[in-house]
Image 1 (cartoon, helix red, strand yellow):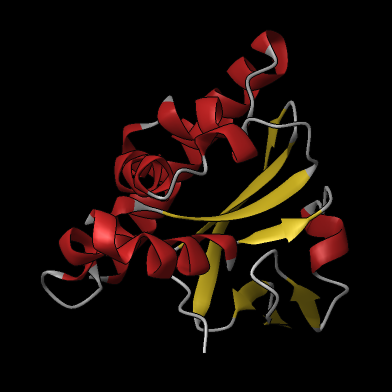
Image 2 (cartoon, one colour):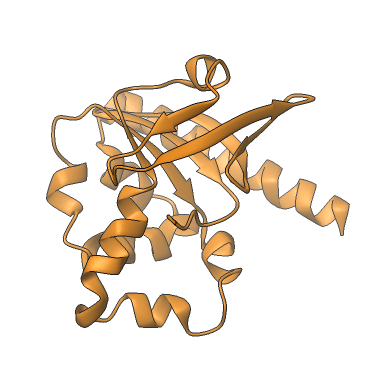
Length: 162
């Protein structure tokens, strides 16, 4: 199981590096970079459902803690489908904005912080242990995926605000 997780993390990192290189050359924004990687299809669908596409395509800069499809799959069955319903837009927006830190915060900055305020208004906790960065209960699996309006750090768990 550990080897499978390592393979998946390595594959995801390779895909993100390709997306970062493409974003650098084409100046893709955060939404475009995420949309160009199938591993973020759930995140992109959620951003659309919450009406945050224009915001995350905006000038920024933003630091996005991007959960993968596998991270969304860890949620209890039916949670994602329920959150994507129009009547739950406020709750979905609160969750998604909890994944956005104002400013462009590369990994070299993030690892120096104990916490960071999010666009949601609440802060996330940050810790580093033996080179592994954890944000709340999520492990950062890839860092510094550059976009024209900020940076993406990939996480393996969806962050839920209090």
